[in-house]
Image (cartoon, rainbow, N blue to C red; front, side):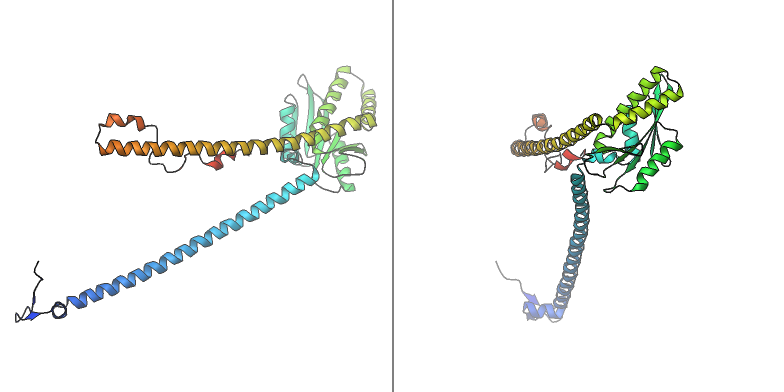
Length: 320
C-alpha cells in the first residue's frame, strides 16, 4: 500500500504530514479539540468525585441515623429486660393499648380511655346492663410515689368505681408484682389482664346475688380483704412469674424460628440462582440455532432479566 502524499493547496509543493496540517490549520484544530477533551475529562472526573463524596456522605448520615435508632432500641430492650417485660406487656403501661386489650378480652363490656379521672374506665355489663365499674391507672415508673396511689384512689371515688387498679413496673419489697395500698390494687403488667378478669367475675357474681347496696359494699370490702390475703397474692404472683417465663420462652422460640427461616431462605435463593443459570444456558442455545419461538415456552416461568432472587430477605421479618 502506497503512503498518502501531502501537497500544498496553493503551490502544489510536496509537504510532510506535519507541514500540511500546520498550513491547512487542521493541526491547530486537532490541538484545540484535544485540549477541550482534556478539559471536559477533568471536569467530569471532578464531578464524579464530588458525587461520590456526596453519596458516601449521605450513606454516613443514614448509617449514623440507623446507629442512633439501634442504640435506642437496645436501650429500650435493656430496660424491658431489667423490668421483666416483653414489648407486648410493656404496651399495657399505656392507656390506649391497655384499653384495646381489655376491649378485646371483655367484648360485652364498655371500655373507655378517659385520660383524666382514671386512664381507662371499665364498665362491667351483664345482659347489656352495667353492674360494676373498674378504673385503671398506668404508671411506667421504676419507683412509685405516694401521689400515684392517691391519684388512683381519687379516680375510684370520682367514678364511683368498685375497684381501682394501678398498672405499674414499680417494685416494693416482698410484693413480687402485686400488692394493695389504700384500697388501690397495684399490679405488674404481666398480671393486669388476669386481675381484671377476676375482678370482673366478682362483680358479675355480686350482680347475680341481687344484694342491697349496703350489703354489696360490705361484700366489695371483703373481696378487697381477700385480695390482700396471702392465698390470693401468691396466686397472682405465681401467674406473673409464669407469664414472664412464657414471655422469655417466646422470645427464644422466635429467635430459633428466625435462624431456621434464614437458612431456608439461603437454600431457596441458591436453588433459584442455579435454575436461572440453567435457563440462561438453554436460552443461548435456542437463540444460536434460531429455533421457533414456541420452543422457548419452556423458559417462560423463569424471569431471565432478574439478576437477584425476587423475594428480599428483609421482607421475611416485616411483621416483627
